[in-house]
Amino acid sequence: MSNKNSNRVYKDESYFKPEKCPLCESEEIIKWGFRYNCTTKKRRYKCNSCKKLFVVDDGFSKCKKKREMITACLDLYMNGMSLRKVATHVNQFSDKEVSHMSILRWIRRYVMTIKPFTNSLNLNLSGVYHADEIYIKCNKEQHYLFDLIDKETRFLVATHYAKEKGLDGAKGLFRKTRQRAEKPLCVYTDGLQAYVNVVSDTWYSNKNPRKKGIEHIRIIDRHDYRNNMIERIQGTIRERVKVMRGFKNPKSAEQILEMFVIWYNFLRVHQGIGMTPAQKAGIELKLGKDKWLNLVYRSKIQA
Ligand SMILES: [Zn+2]
Image (cartoon, rainbow, N blue to C red):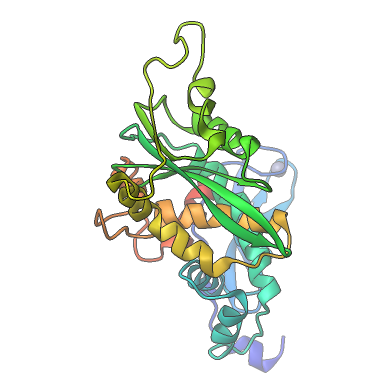
């Protein structure tokens, strides 16, 4: 080891204790020193059953960049900066170069980590939903993001990415809503033809005959005062997605928008309600100061 390395102060980044060996699932594990990389050290364990050494994967295993930097990039991007601007910004403070492509890869990776966890949480919603669609520019084509928000909690219950503003998009949105939340009391939509039968069809069953129980209000007149309410509720989403416009391919657009949904529901304090939509919907994650880091850890523990 060179002189330079031995003087380095390593920050201990071990947050979790494993309960069993990830390879053979034996519970006979003991501490076995540390594993070091360029900036941090992590507790290493040895399995007495299969004799292998391992380190707990806390969501940041095999990352070359510091976890704080990764989460800072995610946060800056979600708050409205472009990928290239985020890269330029963090490169001013770091000796290690970050490219805008790395940030895109991190978004993809952490969507896969966080999404299964956030989707497993139970929601306490008001049951009055607002559905809308936003135009998305992707590879010079016009695509759409269908989204559905719960009125009281502002929780973004479901989104659906569609290449056309037609029946498939509306169906996709309500199918996802049905998977995630209970049957609504009332659904507000705009005058889009695709919505006409979708609401009653989605929750149709022999026990609940068509068009009974769910009130569906289509707001056709632009000057209808209830339209303002939809516009206000949809405002944040429109504002942010507008800046994101200009995606390169539908797959990455979809993943970025999924990350946006996580940020919107669980991390961003909604000014209208003074807390995050998730808190309003009865989910208290206690994420503390480093919200992104703790959300990744929580998702990893629960996995
Ligand atoms: Zn083992």
